[in-house]
Length: 409
Ligand code: NIG
Ligand code: FE
Image (spheres, rainbow, N blue to C red):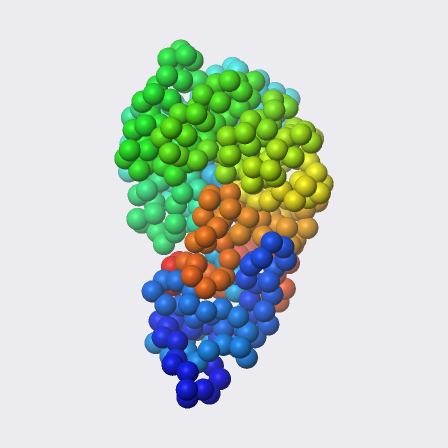
């Protein structure tokens, strides 16, 4: 921006001016830059930083932020948002005293959503999913992870993954699709035969067709054992896919340590994770994805060992876990609020947890999650005085504008 006739101007499609910027760059902190500019070229960030240090920019278009805050577009790194039906009846059953595991064992829970999802065609699934996705986007999300796991048969799992891809075509959002075949044994199914299907047929096919970016499991008494999950992880590794895990949500099954042993991108939930698991995760670079929506809705009194993660230096992300059962919450901001109130995370930890740390949980931190030159120009502009407002208040979205790969969405 300085007058400098000797330096060739940086060519930009779009230049944000008058911004207060939180870059989320670096290993900690928000990376605040007052009076910042952000230059965008070809959908990527070409330059970001203090106006006084900026090179001369030749911009086709300008966007005056008038003192508003810019953050990286938010990243919801754990959702199950492609499903049909609803399970509001289970909410009432839990209020009356039944547990999530009781309901699952009686044929409800995941199995109930499997029945509804199998019965829904692609168009119905897209329509139902778009409503939920749009709620996330209205709060500044620019990347969302979406898991399968409500089909538990070949045709429906593939349909869920295709719908996830379709959503990316219909909205300005990046989608990371995850194959969660090992979510539950299909209703009436044979567990050994189902695991064969997951490991020997589905994972190789999904990898070959590029239908998923990662493979997830639900390691739990009501789902799959450590040995079964290890087999799924091995099949994913053979197919060249990274893994994730629903680990230690309802009991300490050593899920975090197993995920770390397979170099998982993330281990998620983690209410019952022990110190050994936390230490293994930091060594493996496995991100702890914390899902306080599920903790709240299941009235789970046990909370993830945030102090141990903090002490070990484990990366902590926060996500919605948006699903019809344990976390029917289509708001990443609300889940950020819950992470502060229930898990005592700091506002700063949560703001990083829904941006750069969530990007790490998807293995995409080289492309998204912070406002740094070279990354996708995924940006959220907020009408707030202080960034704490993003999680300190529940209600109308303070989002002013959302940009996905440099285009206002
Ligand atoms: O992340 N823990 C397992 N899976 C989901 C819930 C699935 C459901 O209840 O439909 C979760 O909480
Ligand atoms: Fe989940």
